[in-house]
Amino acid sequence: AKNMGGMMGSKKVKPVEAEDVRVNFDDVAGIDEVKSELQQVVSFLKEPERYTKLGAKLPKGVLLEGQPGTGKTLIARATAGEAGVPFFSASASEFIEMIVGVGASRVRELFTEARKVAPAIIFIDEIDTIGRARSSSRAMGSNSEQEQTLNQILTEMDGFTGAEGVVVIAATNRSDVLDPALTRAGRFDRKITVSAPDAGGREQILKVHTRNKPLAQDVDLMAVAKTTPGMTGADLANLANEAAILAAEKRAPAITSRDFAIALEKVQLGSERAIVMPEEEKLRTAYHVAGHALLGMLQPGADQVRKISIIPRGRALGVTLSTPESDRYGYDVDYLKGRIVGALGGMAAELEVFGVMTTGAESDLEQVTNIARNMVGRWGMSPTLGPVQVYPSEGDARQQGASEEVLGLVDREVRSLINECLDRARTLLRENRDKLDSIVEALMEHETLDEAQSYEAAGVQPIPARPLMVG
Ligand code: ADP
Ligand code: ZN
Image 1: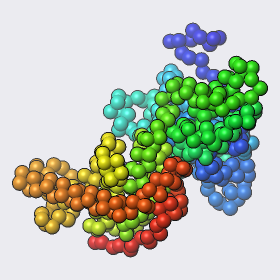
Image 2: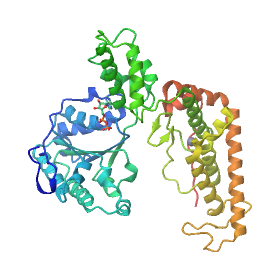
Image 3: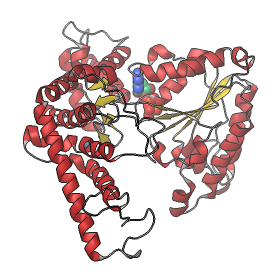
């Protein structure tokens, strides 16, 4: 506390110092895709000239996005360790806790020190605390300290030619609120999502964290992994440690599977994010996402299914990822209906299999209603209503002169369109129940399926995208 008692009780500001990193990629498990993306950064930091000689520009900034505990800090540190370069780290929240004006100068110092010893990595955790979109941060009471600090980071990065050999890695669990200025080309233009690990990944992480711990014969790490869906690397590290403590308290020579079981209960109680999904809920989620996925696979022209997962991801539970093909000029009626059918797939599957509805389809319905409203009221796609625009793209339909009668008609048409699509979704799923069940079986086993695994589990051939030109 030697720096206490300064003006206004300002906190002690520790000097900017590089950390001598002792971890490398062997210490990071279960997130292989993230590792291989960062491998390029490692190669660049090891031998910057190899790239700059050929005029190749490497990313100055990498944004790691993922929920807390997924290993973002660890992998940033391991990237430095792997490349053997100094690691400077700071948390964005600490910048704004500092007295006025210090945040920006702290950033300047950070970059100056890093440049001196480059190649180097600068890691900025919780970038969202200073990098929120300006409009939203202003709405919440503008904070000039925040803006100055952010601007300083952007200025520093813009000043890089790319030959300095300094790579800035930022981490956030809210990339949705970030100011677009941050992710512009030449800044944090490479975004890498760090997901919670699947069962195989969790086993690998448990292996890393039991490397120096004697395990009894009866311990099966894959079995432990299977009972921990939703847990992050941090939760698993914690679990392994708690199990070791339990064994040590008994003066046992090794950790037993019972120690893991007891530790698991303890860790779950202490960690809100480590909600372990009961088997029943897992099954329901699996049917929900499989429903979306299968309908995507069965409809010609629909977006390809890229990944299916029942692992909670951000705030969404179990997402089906499909990427719309690029270069679409517009959407035709069949495609849009297919989108609605696909979005209703989760609900349809739950209805077909369990006969009940759950709240899990809330965001699906939001999407469905949106598409249907646009089809009927904006794009003139309802045969009954004809090619009339009731909802202009901007503004209030009523103010633009739409009558109550027409608005009522739109509502009826929207409802009948959605009902027609729900019927179609349920019929398709009923007729292809075997495929639905196989996807679910694979999901219960692996939790996450990539594109190839998804189509294989369903026994469906990917349908090549239909060329489409409208307008
Ligand atoms: P984040 O920065 O995403 O919040 P951290 O990197 O701080 O997460 O993770 C906290 C700890 O959890 C790490 O130091 C490590 O012990 C463990 N951990 C997290 N993810 C992994 C992983 N993928 N492999 C091994 N250990 C992990
Ligand atoms: Zn859904």
